[in-house]
Image (tube, rainbow, N blue to C red; front, top):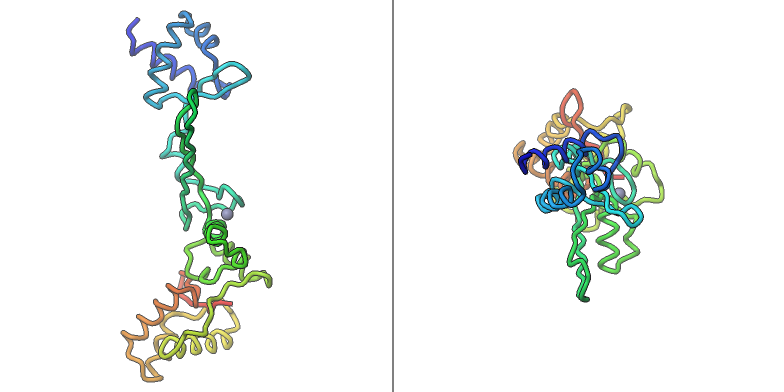
Length: 237
Ligand SMILES: [Zn+2]
């Protein structure tokens, strides 16, 4: 039996097994080879990262790790469980170093965090726990609309950046959007064309109005949504 065929048989076996992981003993029985044979091949498979290991009691069990390309299409925040699939998220790497003889060496874990939890994490790192649970700028995040609605509707969560330093054309345009939004009974957001048209009426050039509108969005003063009719804007709460 060639080396390749034993390795392929091991991976086939692990892949098709109904159990989450298998021991060297089980593999040896299933494939009718000795345990030392299984061990020598599985060591290679593990070093090639084609097979992963887990401890079950005192025994080491083996399984096929999830294909990265398959799992990367769906992510849930490690901390709160919000689905970040296709949206803003951050991958944190945590490294552990072992310095004592006999330690396993350094390992690295990955955590996917949503923007909310990452924001809290950064506040915590900077020892600014007063900012935890506050998300000024949330309106510029690329997160699912239902998640945005949820924080907008929560009266305990601060979601708007301070307007203290907003002046000139930015302040003017934001006031304009607010008044258009209040007039709009649908509250689905004010269409971009309407904002630009009204801004032009006040004397702003079309180009400048578009740039300022984009800047208000980038800084979280307005929430941009893509509806069937096009882009709409909602002022930050
Ligand atoms: Zn989260």
